[in-house]
Image (tube, rainbow, N blue to C red; front, side, top):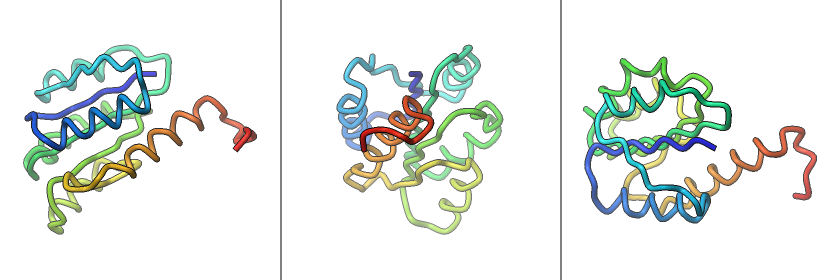
Length: 131
């Protein structure tokens, strides 16, 4: 599985998200892309497996800076954490077509749930598992 974590600045939301990721993917190496260039380079690497992009935006501008590279997210499930509930922020966020849109002040239980489901669905594509 390929997890791409983008966070332009470190802080409390990032630390809490890292905890969620570690609980879902215990062997995750904690690599974080800090710039759009780093993110783009990471997204251009070949992938043969499930790809999830966990994007943490500190401000609306971070979302707007992701839009020009949105074509690099094809075949990638996006989980987007936005900084506020402002209409313009939410509108910009939806342009990235995230699987989950959540807020930086949340408890991230929804991130845990969606990541777990995406991974389970990938490993059991027929949906015929022991759930």
